[in-house]
Image (cartoon, rainbow, N blue to C red; front, side, top):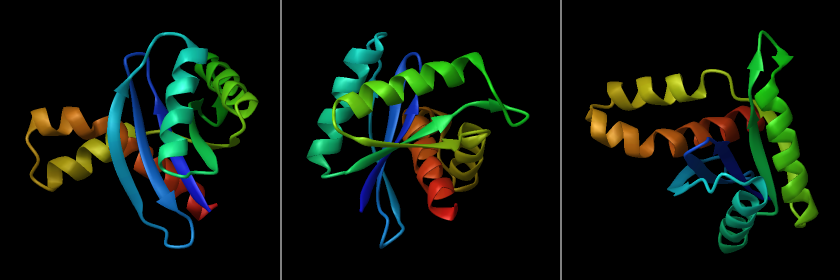
Amino acid sequence: MRLLGVDLGKKRIGLAVMDMEVGLARPLPVINALAALARDAEQVVAVAKKEQAKGVVLGLPLDGGEETQMSAVMRRFGGELENRGLKVFFVDESLTSAEANTAMYEAGLKASQRKKRLDSEAACLILERYREL
């Protein structure tokens, strides 16, 4: 099954895709968040269809293992995606952005390159965490 990883932010939405049988996540271009969950869901559904993804893995922000106010937003976003026909899965996204930034820094990417790719690289890590469950 092919899944789309999503790192939802207030300004940008990081995306990645993974064929679960192969197990390699591939970052996709970042899309701009539209500041409305329904509109953002439409954008994510369009990418999922283009990538032939049957489901979406959303990063769930946790604080010490407990859900936060943003966790509730992510669950509502998941509901928007489910209402549009996608299977939705959640995984703890704690520190994915920091891990992605560190990996890109160690790979020698300049700050400007890291900024452009950060959200989608975090989405790759979200998919990898889900695969490890």
